[in-house]
Image (tube, rainbow over all chains, first blue to last red; front, side, top):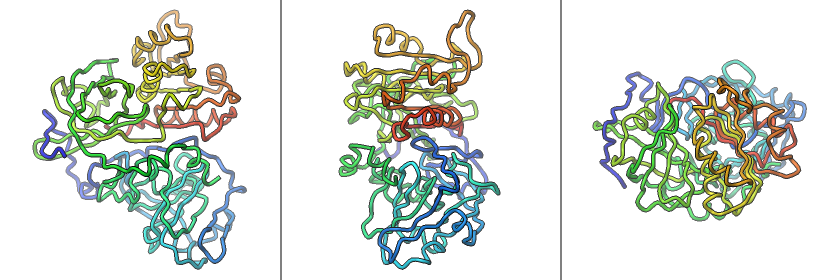
Length: 203
Length: 262
């Protein structure tokens, strides 16, 4: 531990705005919307896109883009926090609540794995994606979600670090045992609560 | 499809079985060295440093006397074989952390950090290649670690580096890159200068495009492992173009340095 260390000559640039209390520890505010991903941006045509609920369910379900878009969409305004330290306040989205998608299947699992075009996965406890806490978002700031930001659809779990809001999501696998996803296997925290600064293993 | 990225990340599961806490620690700045007008290398001695893989980064935390803190991430530019850890810092004029690191910090100061972080955008010589490295500006830092690592390990994996800079004067690590390439024919370096080129410049003088990548990159048949690092527009364009040229998406790894403050 290195408690008490002072960086000689560092003063910092204090924000003194009401937004301060909305910035988790170690984060800083940005106005833009940075892009972060591990590889090339996939470009799946909408006619080839579908969304699947699979795993420990009574029967897997798959919806085409049209069927997915027929679910009621909600407008969502939330602050988002990336583990690379930026936070962005009051972002506005439209998406289908994960509650609506899970309503049609019968399951007793405690975990989900989101899987995506490009092979990306991320794992979440079921309780973090139900109860009005997570969406499959298709619209950002009133426009169709751009490919570099995860379009046509991404998971949106704004109360966790943003890598959990998997881009290019194609489905949820419901599992009995927690399975670390892509970043979770590469040193990043399994849960990722920004208010507890759960960035890396052991945090 | 759903597991391609994960299954291609060999060695990852071994790492996952030995989680350890990334504790904050104090490194000592032993030297600061300007690279270009806007960038500086910080050379650190970090007691107990366990080493890193080329391509990884650290988190840096600054603390003011009243307890105010700010954190940012910086890529490690040094080879794992180097006893000193080198961080490359680009000065962002409106940044909070980078002007402190480039203007205020000096030899003898402590710097609080933790790491190494990031197991995806990383390369070890034994993984082979060939390696296609594409950098924009300070995005050279993690790729420089790979070039230096290969050199230090005496490894002969062919490397081609395509490096986009604004001008000749702003080519980071220019002299060292020239020296390394001059003495090693398996390291091929191509520059492109996007804003201004010196008189008589015969190299590329435009943004990286498909034609340039076709001329410089290994062919998809050679299955290069590609690492692309720089500003988001460059990374998006290069990664998309490489896939369009027939390179395997799972062998194109990206890291983006956005102008997000810092």
